[in-house]
Length: 334
Ligand SMILES: [Zn+2]
Ligand SMILES: [Zn+2]
Image (cartoon, rainbow, N blue to C red; front, side, top):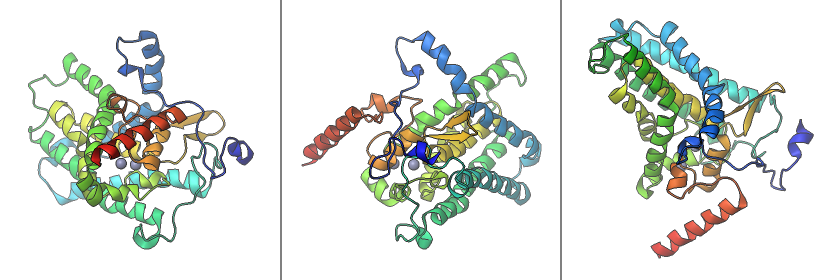
């Protein structure tokens, strides 16, 4: 695996996928129906189906009954917190062990072979992985659990989800499914806008720079953020508060934000399970953001980067275009 992985790696130990990053065909106008029918099954499975199954399992077996959550009480909030800590340890910890401790795919499709920092003043405890784990477990998990608590409390009291639709009607379930399908798209669009906001100088310095201390990234870097960024990042659930009729839609929105953060920061283009299965997580797209800062703020699902001229598809031409754009900005700023 190592020999194969070394193919195409430059002298600095960097590797790039051959193919340019493409935007999803939902961004094309007029619509290309052939491309859409080819793309849609890949959008649904395997990744999003697995995440949806995880959300349904969480709701069915790992969440108290909605009626029991009408009052804010310590027992059920503590239960959600413990369950979310366990989920994050399982996914983020599992990916880290799989890729970096047991090295199950060697360096195959790894963007850089530079190790994580183990003696750097940029990180708490001078150690990148420990810093990233600390910020995830101590800040990210309580913040997104807080949003989840507010969601159930709101639904249990009729403050949310009460739009007059008859529960269990055909319209109700059609809207439920439509919102499930739209969840990753909502995530991608919301992330673009809050991420651009975080790159405004004052916010960048005080808040977002902390996430960018991670130049080489691993799964735990995904949610290694300032608490203010956690509040902004998980505020994606507010979209579901405004639209959803069922709390599972909001739960799925929160969990997608958690899972996508891990997958976009694996440091590998693909996570391989055996010889046949390769899971993509949009990792190259976001890896380029960590490397160059001023490109790829969103995801390849919603082409807002393309629309606003900040898209980097990984090619030398795209790199040159980014370099020119930044030079123009610097010239305009004097
Ligand atoms: Zn990142
Ligand atoms: Zn950024």
